Image 1: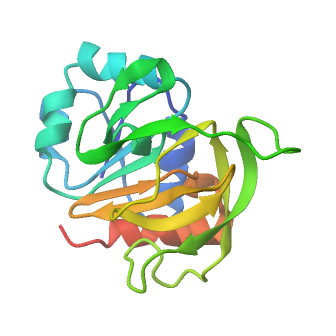
Image 2: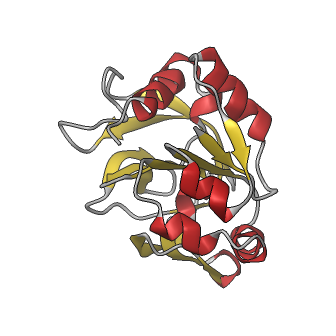
Length: 197
């Protein structure tokens, strides 16, 4: 299991969460390490423009785009799977169609979205949410998000519904932080670990 280091994520929290599940993880920083990984997690926090620049500076973009085994993006890492983010007009990996846009909170809500929110499954069958009760709470920290489309596996509400999780082919993603979301988050990570290669 490889955890991609773009220099903009709390790698330790992801690694510890995987360790609690009995999974060994390695921090990967080069194209060759990506190519050799059985599966990958792409975590991220902060600005999309910085993360996109790091993809290029580290020469990781092509290796990630060629990766055919299970790949999960977490938070900003999930946003990078899309074509573009409005945050700094950042170029994503283009593995998923669509543009990540700024969330506009409802009156009385603060920006960014920070805290626990319910996630509703958008499919009857979903790998990530297998064994997770519909409407379970997960922990979010984000101001931008993807619209709901065919890749969406779970949705949440913040300034209207948005894609809280995606599944498409070998791609998985969580806008929430599974490593900070208690038992439900641990189950999501375990489900990704057992996703077929």
